[in-house]
Image 1 (cartoon, each protein chain N blue to C red):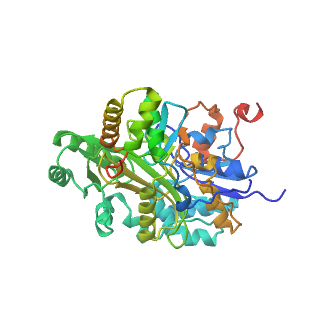
Image 2 (image 1 turned 30 degrees about the vertical axis):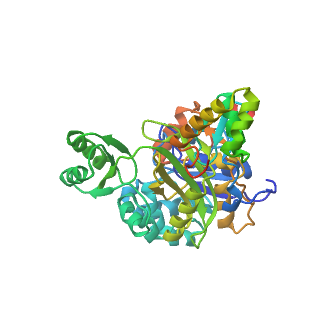
Image 3 (image 1 turned 90 degrees about the horizontal axis):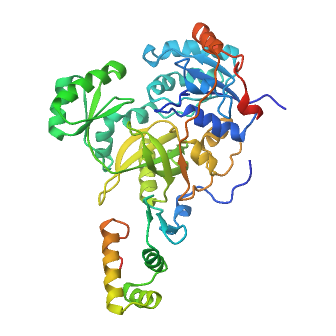
Length: 361
Length: 94
């Protein structure tokens, strides 16, 4: 056996607001069993750090929070790279991507490859720029305004008309019915995610998602489109069914081409009865359900890795309409010694201490 | 890893709009909505998918269910109206 491929992945928590990292590890390890996975984490309690299954990791390193900026992140990545020979980096959190995009050339020189969008494309699809993007590309989308204080937010909300969604620039959204609730939600979101805080027209209907991977020229290499079957109270999809809607796919292609996007993406649409699909969000990463298409022949994380390694790629299947997924929560067993080591040292590379039942049974 | 037979290409994603699972369950492959239907509704929907026109359909339903032509026509018309109002079929067809 040769030296295993080493991949670093972020976003490894799979709670009620699941992040994509564990799904990506599952997709990759299913195809490449001897893969070495380095977890880059912001919280010692990210759930997948304690997995013994397909989504297990081989070593964990804590990262500085994104608001600390790119310089600290680069220092930390250089420290990690002296201990690990990371070849591929797959960042999965909206809040960290701007930093990783900034330090991508330095990481490349350190031997770490990533498939990241150009900075202009990353900014153009940001939530606060969504309305302008829709307008300039003749796409239908919900009316959205960005505000840096509660007064302006209330002004924009009144223009739109209640109810409205109040959203953080990276995460979190609340449906708000009055100005009283609006101020409270503004404070809550601004405290956690900073400003601007967004106010968006509340539209209701079915949610459709397209996950995909784009090449260097803004062309889609592979994709899977679903309708969300069930959602959490925060709107996160906990189930979905593959659809074959050529209009959605054509719109996704237009968006990706217009942005000259490169790398993973998730584009979300909303469709009310008798209305066109509205562009709801365009996320710069794989979604948490990316392991679903991987299991039905469309392994996009694997294709990403193959592309970065210059390996000849496996063809991707068309995802068959009617294939569906239902998310399933499980209890992982950990040992306090792992948490203690990770919390104290900021890294943990000794492997799981808790019983490896899932691996041996 | 093994070789795949179908490329991931938009042209390949077009298949029948409706997929039937037994007599009483149907998936709209474009919207992702699925429906539990009566066996009669399922029968009519299958006939529509097979390309039968409304005029032709009434005769088929009449024979299949032993009802008179006027009732078959009315039932089909009501059913098609419901499908249109739900956006399951388009106004231009039938």
